Figure 1 (cartoon, rainbow, N blue to C red):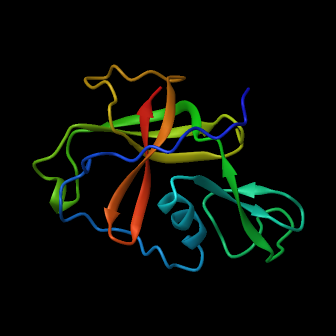
Figure 2 (cartoon, helix red, strand yellow):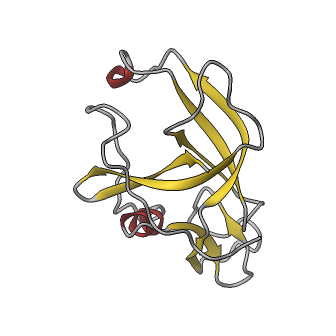
Length: 153
C-alpha cells in the first residue's frame, strides 16, 4: 500500500447548489481539518501523547484523554465501507437536487478511520458497490472554506 499523498485536485464547479449551510473553518476543534483541505490535503486528528488517530475530531484523545491533539496528513484514497443514495434530501437547498451518493470511506493508510462524504461521480440507481475505490477531491465552498469530497478511483 502506498503512503505517498495523491496530487491535490479541486473541483472545477461546485457539486452542491447554492444555499447549503457550511461549517466554520475557524472552529477550534475542526480548524486543522479545514486548514489542510484549503491546501488540498486530507488530514485526520492525531494525539501527540499516545499517537492515536481519531475522527471525528475532539478536544481530547479518545484513548489516553490527553489534550495534545494535532493533525496528520493521510494519502486520501480508500474504499467505500458503506453508502446511501439520497433521493429525498432534507436540506431546503437540495429539494430540487439529486439523487446523490453519500459514502463512508475507510482510509487506506488509516483503516481505523472512516470519513463520510459525497461521491461526486458515484454510479446511481443502486449501482455503488461496497469496496469501490475512491480518492479525495476538494470543493471550494466559500472564500475561506474548502471541503473534502470523493471521486471514483
